[in-house]
Image (tube, rainbow, N blue to C red; front, top):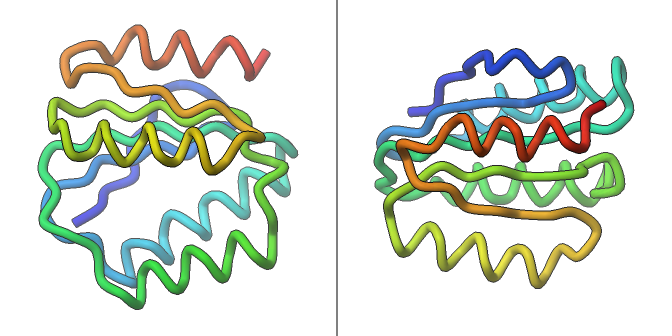
Length: 123
Protein backbone atom coordinates (compact mmCIF):
# COMPACT_ATOMS: atom_id res chain seq x y z
CA UNK A 1 0.00 0.00 0.00
CA UNK A 2 1.14 3.47 -0.79
CA UNK A 3 -0.17 6.61 0.91
CA UNK A 4 0.51 10.19 -0.19
CA UNK A 5 1.68 12.40 2.67
CA UNK A 6 2.40 16.10 3.14
CA UNK A 7 5.88 17.26 4.16
CA UNK A 8 5.35 21.01 3.63
CA UNK A 9 7.47 21.30 0.50
CA UNK A 10 5.40 22.65 -2.39
CA UNK A 11 7.20 20.78 -5.18
CA UNK A 12 7.51 17.48 -3.29
CA UNK A 13 5.85 14.20 -4.16
CA UNK A 14 5.82 12.51 -0.76
CA UNK A 15 4.53 9.08 0.13
CA UNK A 16 4.69 6.26 2.64
CA UNK A 17 5.00 2.60 1.60
CA UNK A 18 3.82 -0.28 3.73
CA UNK A 19 3.37 -3.65 2.09
CA UNK A 20 3.16 -4.27 -1.64
CA UNK A 21 3.10 -1.46 -4.22
CA UNK A 22 0.34 -2.00 -6.78
CA UNK A 23 -0.25 -0.57 -10.23
CA UNK A 24 -3.02 1.60 -8.72
CA UNK A 25 -0.57 2.93 -6.11
CA UNK A 26 1.93 3.79 -8.83
CA UNK A 27 -0.79 5.58 -10.82
CA UNK A 28 -1.52 7.82 -7.82
CA UNK A 29 2.16 8.75 -7.38
CA UNK A 30 2.73 9.39 -11.09
CA UNK A 31 -0.41 11.49 -11.35
CA UNK A 32 0.78 13.61 -8.41
CA UNK A 33 4.24 13.88 -9.98
CA UNK A 34 2.70 15.12 -13.24
CA UNK A 35 0.64 17.73 -11.39
CA UNK A 36 3.71 18.95 -9.49
CA UNK A 37 5.81 19.13 -12.67
CA UNK A 38 3.06 21.14 -14.39
CA UNK A 39 2.82 23.49 -11.42
CA UNK A 40 6.48 23.85 -10.35
CA UNK A 41 8.70 22.46 -13.11
CA UNK A 42 11.27 20.77 -10.89
CA UNK A 43 10.19 18.22 -8.29
CA UNK A 44 11.65 16.26 -5.40
CA UNK A 45 10.57 12.89 -4.01
CA UNK A 46 10.22 11.84 -0.38
CA UNK A 47 9.80 8.09 0.08
CA UNK A 48 9.14 6.72 3.56
CA UNK A 49 9.49 2.93 3.44
CA UNK A 50 7.86 1.47 6.56
CA UNK A 51 7.71 -2.04 5.10
CA UNK A 52 8.12 -3.38 1.60
CA UNK A 53 6.64 -6.62 0.32
CA UNK A 54 7.43 -6.07 -3.35
CA UNK A 55 6.01 -4.27 -6.34
CA UNK A 56 3.65 -5.49 -9.04
CA UNK A 57 5.21 -5.91 -12.48
CA UNK A 58 2.46 -3.69 -13.91
CA UNK A 59 3.53 -0.92 -11.50
CA UNK A 60 7.14 -1.15 -12.69
CA UNK A 61 6.03 -0.99 -16.33
CA UNK A 62 3.85 2.03 -15.57
CA UNK A 63 6.77 3.78 -13.85
CA UNK A 64 9.19 3.11 -16.72
CA UNK A 65 6.63 4.25 -19.29
CA UNK A 66 6.14 7.48 -17.34
CA UNK A 67 9.90 8.05 -17.07
CA UNK A 68 10.35 7.33 -20.79
CA UNK A 69 7.47 9.65 -21.80
CA UNK A 70 8.12 12.50 -19.34
CA UNK A 71 11.83 12.06 -18.70
CA UNK A 72 13.97 12.49 -15.63
CA UNK A 73 15.07 16.09 -16.08
CA UNK A 74 12.41 17.48 -13.73
CA UNK A 75 13.52 15.33 -10.79
CA UNK A 76 16.11 17.09 -8.64
CA UNK A 77 16.42 14.97 -5.48
CA UNK A 78 15.05 11.84 -3.88
CA UNK A 79 15.10 11.23 -0.13
CA UNK A 80 14.42 7.69 1.07
CA UNK A 81 13.62 7.00 4.73
CA UNK A 82 14.25 3.39 5.63
CA UNK A 83 16.02 1.08 8.01
CA UNK A 84 15.97 -1.74 5.44
CA UNK A 85 19.46 -2.51 4.09
CA UNK A 86 18.02 -3.94 0.86
CA UNK A 87 16.22 -0.66 0.12
CA UNK A 88 19.41 1.28 0.86
CA UNK A 89 21.26 -0.94 -1.62
CA UNK A 90 18.66 -0.28 -4.32
CA UNK A 91 18.89 3.48 -3.66
CA UNK A 92 22.68 3.37 -4.06
CA UNK A 93 22.32 1.59 -7.40
CA UNK A 94 19.71 4.13 -8.55
CA UNK A 95 22.02 7.01 -7.63
CA UNK A 96 24.64 5.54 -9.95
CA UNK A 97 22.19 4.83 -12.78
CA UNK A 98 20.35 8.16 -12.63
CA UNK A 99 23.11 10.74 -12.47
CA UNK A 100 20.85 13.72 -13.20
CA UNK A 101 19.56 13.86 -9.64
CA UNK A 102 20.66 12.95 -6.12
CA UNK A 103 19.29 9.93 -4.26
CA UNK A 104 20.03 9.81 -0.55
CA UNK A 105 18.94 7.43 2.22
CA UNK A 106 18.10 8.46 5.75
CA UNK A 107 17.29 6.33 8.75
CA UNK A 108 13.58 5.92 9.44
CA UNK A 109 13.78 8.21 12.48
CA UNK A 110 15.61 11.04 10.65
CA UNK A 111 12.76 12.65 8.73
CA UNK A 112 13.95 16.17 9.54
CA UNK A 113 17.33 15.65 7.82
CA UNK A 114 15.59 14.19 4.76
CA UNK A 115 13.28 17.18 4.51
CA UNK A 116 16.16 19.63 4.92
CA UNK A 117 18.05 17.77 2.16
CA UNK A 118 15.06 18.19 -0.18
CA UNK A 119 14.52 21.83 0.74
CA UNK A 120 18.07 22.68 -0.32
CA UNK A 121 16.98 22.16 -3.93
CA UNK A 122 13.47 23.55 -3.74
CA UNK A 123 14.20 27.13 -2.85
